[in-house]
Amino acid sequence: MSIYEVHLASWRRADDGGFPDWQRLSDTLIPYLVDLGFTHLELLPVSEHPFDGSWGYQPLGLYSPTARHGTPTGFRDFVRACHAAGLRVIVDWVPAHFPTDEHGLGRFDGTALYEHSDPREGMHQDWGTLIYNFGRREVSNYLIGNALFWIERYGVDALRVDAVASMLYRDYSREDGQWLPNVHGGRENLEAVAFLRRMNEVLGQEHPGASTHAEESTAWPMVSRPPEMGGLGFHYKWNMGWMHDVLDYMTRDPVHRKYHHNQLSFGLMYAFSENFVLPLSHDEVVHGKGSLISKMAGDYWQKFANLRSLYAFMWAHPGKKLLFMGGEIGQWNEWNHDTSLDWGLLDFPLHAGVRDLIRDLNGVYRGNPALHEVDFEPAGFEWVAADDAECSVVAFVRWSRDRSRALLYVGNFTPVVRHGYRIGVPMAGMYRERLNTDSQHYGGSNVGNGFEPLFAEEIAAHGRNLSLNLTLPPLAALYFEWTA
Image (tube, rainbow, N blue to C red):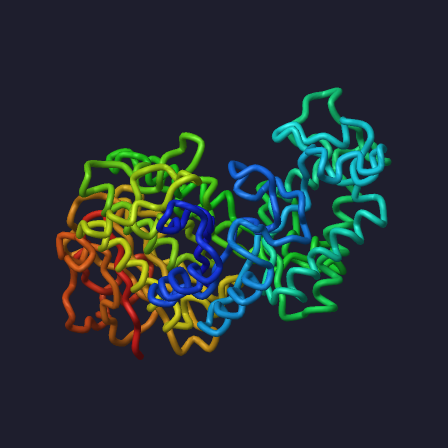
């Protein structure tokens, strides 16, 4: 699962500067994603919404595909075109809140019909929006029906539920005195929990091939476990902790990274507690946070090297992948929902090199089952070097389910070329360098181990009896495919 997250209105504007229609998106976006090897397309909300600047996250017409891109039939045809090209479609879905606009659901019959009457329950502090009264059966059924609607009427494959954390806690973004406890005196929103479980149960019964993804940023347990186990019933959960740790690490000057080495390794302490998606989403490139490449440490060349290294680490790490549009071309500007991506950057080799790396990462990822078959169990992962903080080197092995295929990842997060670096390995045999983010093809310095295969030697390293003698390029990652 390699997901490309898109805001349709600003991916590539129409020639007149307006919104692209569904046919234009079919003709441009779909071939682009197929060429880059993505498996899934995730759309920011396509439900009708009054304010462009909400990016669709303040919807009013939950049962209406936005008219910005054409007709409902056009949207259905777009989804069918995605399927014909081998892409599955995820749509962002927002049951967490709705705007107060008079033509919406707020005080629909003059009373608090869909929302709570008390603002301590019915008003969202962050967005000034209304909160559904999940305890009302009619409201719950209205929302569950809408979840089914997108799957049944338009063929959508999955729903990504936005702002789940704000649904789960009554005191979310609230000070003392601004919220009401539940019937047991606690902070959990029991009605929202029951709604999410029921929604996932109904979707599972009616459409077992569909999936749901939770954007949930807290430590709420078992988000991606079945309701009968006490879970919320989602298939996947966004791993916000991994994202924050790794991005913070990549902003640090390499000379200081040895003091923060745990930010690379800590995610493996809980990596198998949920079915995680690793998100580098739209939320990380707005509101003054800067673009992904602008976050990277170092000078101009080092920023590109760090970005390539980040992507290789992410694609090798357990968990499904999600990248927001623009990340694949190394866009310098923060995302602006009113304009197209900076496509002209692809005229420059370093930017084109990032795009080419994403294509190759997806190719290796799809072609080697070791990278995706066992994402949610410890059996698919094995540390090789987790604690070489002094050199800022990380190495691990990913295994296929039957252990017939393996991939060795080695990352050097400093600008120092390391000759003769010995990496312990768990298996004898031949290792071939499959991907090197420092390749000149991507704009790197072309340091590496060449095309000739390497063989494990009976020399101990990293607590193992076998090892490889490697050259580690600067600020780069290496993938080695193993053959017994």
